[in-house]
Length: 353
Ligand SMILES: *Cc1c(COP(=O)(O)O)cnc(C)c1O
Image 1 (spheres, rainbow, N blue to C red):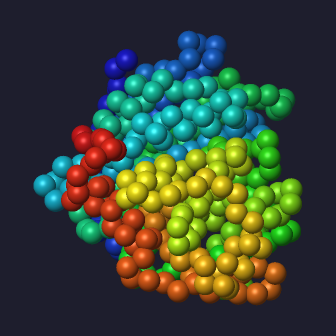
Image 2: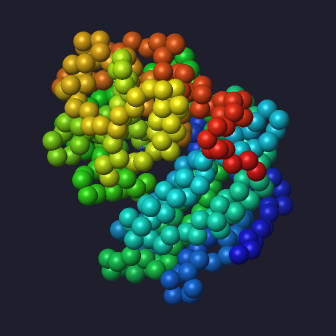
C-alpha cells in the first residue's frame, strides 16, 4: 500500500531537547491510519502536519476505554545516521494490546514502513545531544459514535514524535519506591500485560499519595495477596543478589518490557544467572536490611536502566547503597552505547533508516 504524504509548507523552529520536558514538544508531522470494519479495514496511511482530531462526544473510546499506545525511540549516531531500537517488538506488542482490547491488528509490514517513513521525514527532529532521543508514540483508539457497549468498528491509529531529554542519567538521583498493600495496578486475568489507557489512569491517585510521602513511584504488588512484586511505576524491576538477578515472570499481570527483555539478554551474555521468579515483598525488604540485595533497578524505554535507593513498606524505609560500578549503571552504558551506535549491535536490535 502506498503512503500519502502531505508536508507542512514551513517547519517549526526546533530547540535542543534538553530545554524542555518529556513529551512537551512534538515534531511537524504525524502518521495517521484509519480503520473501518465496514469499508475494507485499514485505509492508506497518511503522513500530514501534526493536528487535532475531531471526535463526536459519543466516540466509543471516551466512554469505554478502547485505547492503546506504545513507546519507542530513535537515536542519532555520531555519523549522523538515525536508528530505531527494536521497533518490530513495539509493533508486535501493540498488536497484542489490540487483541486484548478487541481492537483490529495492524498489518506489521505496512505499519513499519509508514513509521520509518515518518521518522525519515522528521529526521531533523532527532536530537544530537548526549542521552537525548526522539520518542515515538503510537496511539490507537475506537472512534465510532454510538452509545451501546461494544467494540468500535472504526479506529484511528496515529504516531506522533517528540524530541526528549534523557529521563535518567548516570549519577542522577536514584529512585525511591513505595510498596502499598491497599491498591494494585492490575489483576490476574486483567489488562496488566497491555499498554492500555485504564492501567495508567488507575495509578494516578496512589502515585500522587506516594509522591507526597517523598517517593518517586510505586512498587506494585499483586492484587490478590499484596505480596508479590510486579512492576515499579511504568517500568519493570530487577533485584540483584550475589549469585543471581531476579525479575518478576511474565504472568499476564505485568507489561512485557522490551528493555526488560534486552537487559535479560545482556545479563545472560555476561554469564549471569537471571531468574524470572516471584519476589515476596517481605523477603525483599528483609534481604535489603540484611545486606543481601546488591542492587534493585528499573528498566523501560524512557528510563533505560535506573537504580533504586529506597523501598518503603509498612511504614518503614529500607535503604540501598548506590554503587558507581554497579550493574544498573553498567547496563545503562551497554544499552545506550548500542542505541547510539557506539558499541557493536550483536543481537541485531537496531533498525537504521
Ligand atoms: C511501557 C511499560 C514498561 C516498559 O516497557 P519497555 O518496552 O521497556 O519500554 C513497563 N511497565 C509498564 C506498565 C509499561 O507501560
